[in-house]
Amino acid sequence: MSGKANGRVAPATAERIRDVAHSLGYQPNAAARALRSGTSSLLGLAVLDASHPFYGLVLAAADDAARDLGLSLSMIQTRGPEPVWEQRLADGLSSGYLAGGIIFGERLTPDSPLRTWAEQLVFVEVPEPGLRAILLDTATAMTDVVDHLAGLGHHEIAYFAADYPSAVFARRQRHCAEAARRRGTRLRTARTWRATFDVETATTAARHLLDAGVQAVVCDDDLLALALHRVAVDRGLTPGDDVSIVGFGDLDMARLVHPQLTTVRLAADEIARAALTSLTRSTPSTPSTPSTPTIGAPLIVRGSTGPCLAQFA
Image (cartoon, rainbow, N blue to C red; front, top):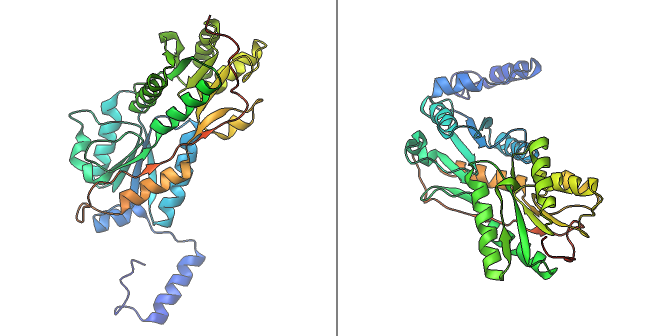
């Protein structure tokens, strides 16, 4: 069953054994195979929050891609203290339990134990200098967002930020601020306009935004945008008419509200497959020059954005 039967077992006997194994539902034990061969077929997938719908899409797409390559995945959440997830992933690599790691939206700490395993890592959206990465074109996406809102007459834009110490959200906000500066549009931020992805926190921050009389809001994530959408409707406001809302991610639920959510699309399937391809293209014994392919993140305009009716209160 290990593939070493040639010259040792008669072809007819080998075929009979395989047929019996198939009828019994036999599957190779990945852990045992890793222990015997000294290599692993398991990859670590580090994401912010496994409960977030986008990362569910990423996991499904990555698992499909990994299966096609004869690999499997193990998920690690990066929320919480930085050294914890870094050490967990490093431990998996050093023990041989993991063959590599895909890291979504995070940078390594200066003394990260993962730096020892740099050749076995690929970073998504937030590049780590000198290492392999898959970039999402959030700079162009935020330029498109600001240009869209400015073209509707919005000279001031509020930013609804994800309240996590994650590099991915700092990068998105920075790109939005740069785009607003180039366009001559004022970008407003406030400590009370930050929230995690839980309903209560996001709802409270959304109320603060609307209390400030905002007319256009760019959100770090669709979940925040949908919380703002719901609070606006609860107050008798119509997204797209009374307040323009832009999300980030293009989750399926963005099309389940009315009006549908204008948002930046992140193609989970394309991102996951690009990360797997980058990670498996070379191994520590056959290194390649780190590459940084870029995946587009188009703005999808729907009904939640519209012409500006008034300035900020």
